[in-house]
Every structure is written in C-alpha cells, then in structure tokens.
Length: 210
Figure: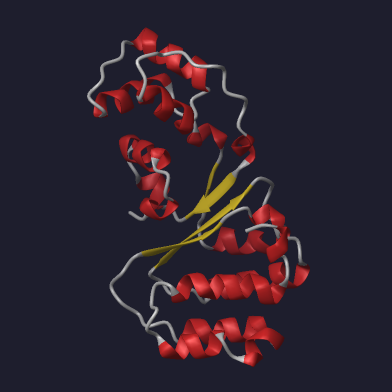
C-alpha cells in the first residue's frame, strides 16, 4: 500500500480484490465488489463481502504492508471491525515502519498478537552459519562473524553474499526495515529457531503460514 490507497473506497476495494483472488469463481463476492453500492458504502459492503467467503480447508495470509502510509481515520476506525470478521482460515500480518495506530491496538492485543522487530529479523552469527550449511557451504565461526559484520545480519545481504565466493561486500546501509513492526498470531513464538530463520529468509510473506 501507499498514500494513494489512503481513501476508504480505494483501500477496501484493494482489500477485497486480494481476497477475491483466492476464490475467483465466487460470484456473490464479485457482485458485491463490483456494485455501485460498494463505492458509496465500502465498509458495510466489505463486511457483506466477507460473509460470502466460502469456508474451506485452506490456510491463507492477509498481509497489510506499509500500513504506516494509511492515516485516514475512517479507514483506521473501521479496520478492526473488518479484521474481526475475517474467516478463521486467515493469518493476519500487519507491517508498519511506525508504531501501529491506536485504532488497531485493542484488536492486536485481543488476538494475542506477537510483535516482531529488528532484533528478530536480523540473523545472528550462529544462524548465518546454519544458513550457509543448509546451502551446502561451510563457514567457520570467524567467517560467520565476518558475514554478520558485513551485512548487519540482514537476510538480503546474507543471501547475496552466499551466492559469491567472497565474505565481504560494500557495507550495507542500515535498512529502514529496522523500524518495522510485524504483528502475527502466536505461531511465531511456538516456532523452532531454525523454522524462524527459514521464514525470515523467505521473500514471500505468504510462505510464513505454518
């Protein structure tokens, strides 16, 4: 998302379009999404839209990225009501560079959400060593510390170095992602450290579904 999505109709149209992509043949959801009423009453019709979702055995992730760009009070006030009506087959992930707005605090607390900050997103030297090992490359502890110092522990830098013969690269500027707050369901805490590492190194958030 970005600042151009900071209008109720645009935001909830995008929201519902993503969910419809899971069930593209759901005619009832499609009719609601494309109706003129959706433009005038996006919140009410988003709730109607979700009620038509056909429950199945699938597991899905709803990812609201760059949530810090959404400041419209009408969107933020209605969003917790919408999220509470999400089908139980969805894991909800909220990504923001800033603290989540007050309107979402009660919702995240009620769901037992887990904050994931820069400390969890960066690799330790031991995790780097394990990651290289999974790729069939052996690193000594000293070499792993070198990679850590070069990359700051960020997955994108570690992945890039793992594809080269060098342990060194131009120093990576501190990533703006250090301010990210990711809130997920408690499955994160139950994960083994090795599982967390694989999830963090994944480039597709949807792959984080347990």
